[in-house]
Image 1: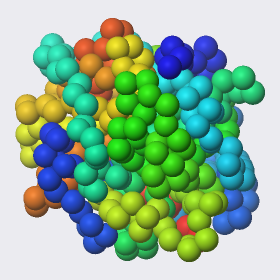
Image 2: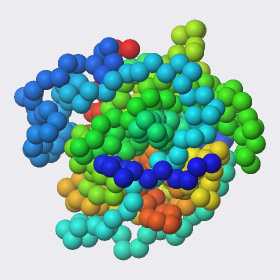
Image 3: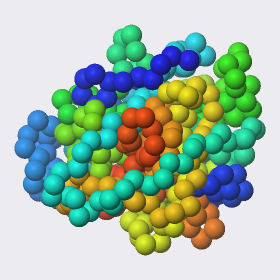
Image 4: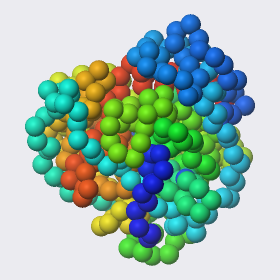
Length: 380
């Protein structure tokens, strides 16, 4: 496999959680036809790109669905037809999108941070064949430029507006958008349960059907946090505290009209505003590709302790931190906890040091919930 991809422009759950507990269907390198047209700032604070968003960003938790539609429309995601594009050869050439490189915290946030990172937790490979519940996990492929393609990780999340028929995938914002001064990545697609059978493990040749048992699902719409789009960069920083995004997908090769959730058989709910005091341990999943990994295995870090805290800006939600050795390609992979005996998504892989020793993910608060509600209520 190729070496780990690093951007040079802007933006570079124990096994038991997903192995033993299925959620079934009732339970976390554009503007499509339903995207709203670009608009000026609304009464509650939405604004066009390129403007001073200081006050608007502070008020994001109060944005209405209309505000989100205007902002998303102004940021111009363009849907593309990709039928047959992500074949076996192109998927093999895609390089792992790095987690953001961790940077020093600002002085004003020191009280928000725990003094030492958690102990290193070696990532472990999920046994083959992956369980039905693990089918919610997969790879996100994208084109960064005409010569470079990349890959991240994502999770099929439950959609209350379309119960049992979700087409939504949760991931990191830096897997979808370049950040400050940049734009959306192109030709994005989600491949759930990549290499489920293990046919491609240990460098073996495998067919498209073997590595993509549920096919490739084309992105027809996407949204990221406005903070990431306006402020995001290659290194970790305040924008990392909002490093989350959502894809809406469809299968161009399917003629039966089934949703992503119907195809894979399950989805995972997102637990917004999860009380930090109730998080006793986290399982983070992804498809790391940077050495010593090769991107062909679903890996997980099973932390049995309360996540540590990391903050670059005390006015923004404090990130979670766990020990984990996953590398580039795992970006965007889901963080899971058990809630009422079932897995729920509370975060995603975002930033970490070099070499990999720990991983930080954003807390999903009111703004993340508002963004999710916007995506959920869009017409298909």
